[in-house]
Length: 216
Image 1 (cartoon, rainbow, N blue to C red):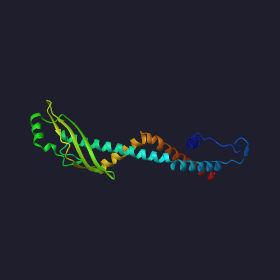
Image 2 (cartoon, one colour):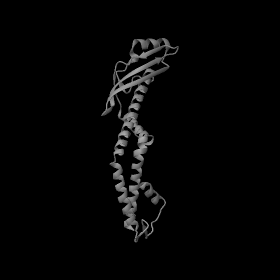
Image 3 (cartoon, one colour):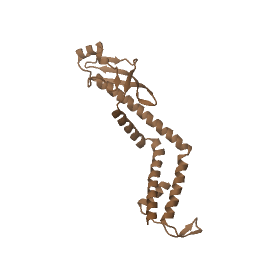
Image 4 (cartoon, rainbow, N blue to C red):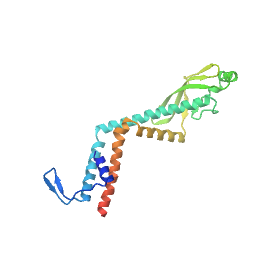
């Protein structure tokens, strides 16, 4: 609320009366912009510290981190499945992210391609095992079906794990996209990031107004 009030005062150019009453009975005189902004800055700093060290804030931080990690985990699985799907549909010579996944080299796959042509549809899912500190590398298992014209179908194993590793470019893209989604569309963002953002903007405005008041 205080941050919103500071934003309103600054954006709508609200002014302060040089005299008035405090709590309805105490006369206040010589109210200057410098005194007002010093007071607002001190109260804002106090309210921010109270908010930052509150137990609910710790819970919100944990929830935000968990939400980010779950979105990142889902994105990694999606990218790995997409990589394997493109390989099995013969859109690339080999997987770009996965080492050792060579289902197209099997005799059954070659026979099916010789008889029915290129696959027309691949339904595949991935399950990954990763280190929490190194989510961009680990092992992946694929399970699903490769379908050809005429209804012929071949299943992918799912038992053998393959090593995967993301490039720096892919890591940057996934990390930024996941962070943006976490920051813009999650309960944790509303509970945590919005108040922090308002406090930061209000603090910048307080500093700006203090500088203007000192130089006036």
